Picture 1 (tube, one colour):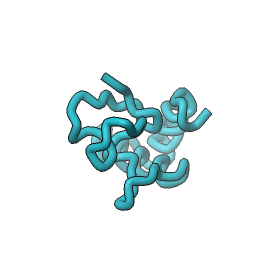
Picture 2 (picture 1 turned 180 degrees about the vertical axis):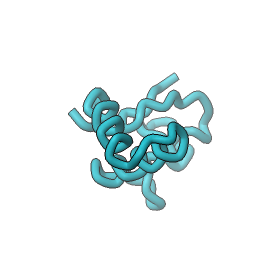
Picture 3 (picture 1 turned 90 degrees about the vertical axis):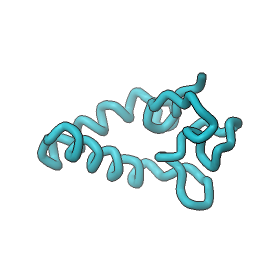
Length: 77
């Protein structure tokens, strides 16, 4: 099982991979519609929104949390 290099999500099933392509190192949530990986800014925005929605943090706190998570991932080092 691979882990997404951009968000850290475990990719357990073919559907979890970008474009269902198991050779990709990033998940469907980190891919653009054309299958390319989102930029740092795109991913930061989507992770911030996810944290606000799921953890109830305000936007600035969520953005800082997202930055902290992302700095540990291979895609953003």
